[in-house]
Length: 294
Length: 82
Image 1 (cartoon, chains in turn yellow, orange):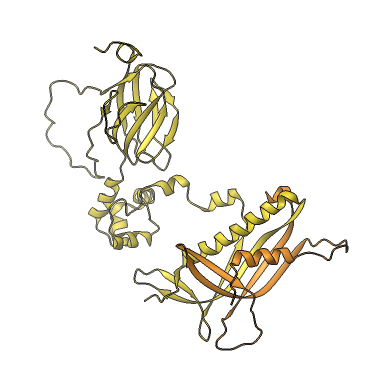
Image 2 (cartoon, each protein chain N blue to C red):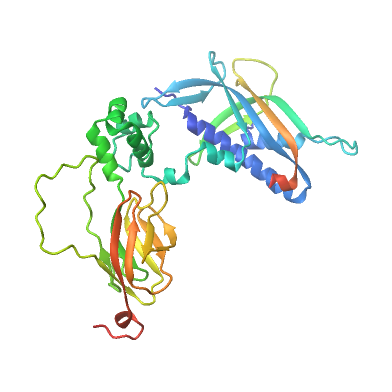
């Protein structure tokens, strides 16, 4: 049982690091008016702590109090490192943006078991799954295969809708002021889909590409969905085989630049490799200022 | 007892590295080993460490343990400190 005044090791180290950052910031401010200044290069702390473990199996430190014998000695060393060194020794920012195990619907004990294997988000789960296999992760982490597959399916990117800037956002409500194309939610395929033994029933006509009607003055396109930003970044959006610049990227919302009014084929490559295609139609007559709607 | 945040104690230690005025000496590097009394507290949801030099040289059962801090300070040009 953790006693009062004990903290997880990461909190312990983070607290000291933030104090060191404060020191460096103060010294940097001081350097504005001085040609020479001192910098804190290294700090080593030899702390006497009691090491405890809580019910979740997390190691916690508590600094020793007066008249407490038997404390452990922990030597912590802090040094200044450069930005390239940080980038070399930490995971990418994109990887940290990946949905966490909690967001994927994993139970706390399942999260804990996977975190012990170095998996704390979807990107890490996918990477380990592609190298070791879901069965292996399941066996080593003692988490059922179905639960891991469920987590992976929950984290798949989904595109719910595409609408031009200034048009009605279905998630906000209010009067409809522009055309919207909504993509029905997809059932994400599991890693091992069932093999179809009979040909699928034919609908008689080929599936039509959804059409996005865009007012002539629109300069941006909004993509709404889930998990739109993957480890390699936001989805790639192409109009008539020309890349469109991504202006803003969040997991549930991506804004792309629409440089000029041009109709054509819009392709959105989602982080999992799937491509959504649309027909972009610039409707000059209906949506031009003062134009008549038909 | 007055507790200083670890950052304040470190800043004061850095400030203390000054050669006597007029001596023409510049300290380029200093390595300080100092015993510290360390205490932690949560303030506004944030864990803060306090660290101050021992307020007494006496060793007794009612005084906090001392921990060892080893601090390396070096002179830098202002441009490189930015």
